Length: 93
Image 1 (cartoon, one colour):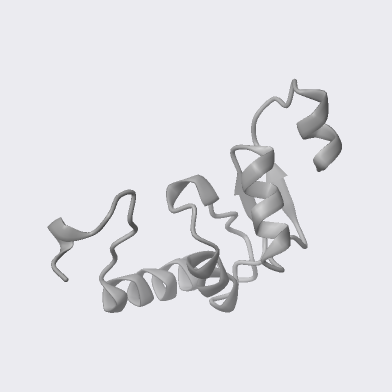
Image 2: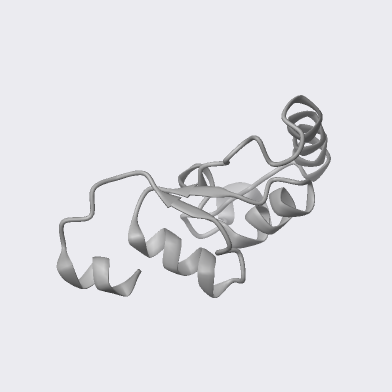
């Protein structure tokens, strides 16, 4: 299947480039000093790769992103960087 034929939305990456970027980020900000933003990719598999590279804390834009990260076992240290005004969503956290 060619990229234009993929159903959207779809996350398409260059795996080698991603791995190089993860290594660069880990070298520049060792020891989990970087808190990647889940909104950039909305993909728990990619977040798991970020964690494997040493980034164990994440920023989420919405409660739904935080819940998805926690459900994927990536919820040890999540920051919701937005207001949560819906009581149901706040309770879900």
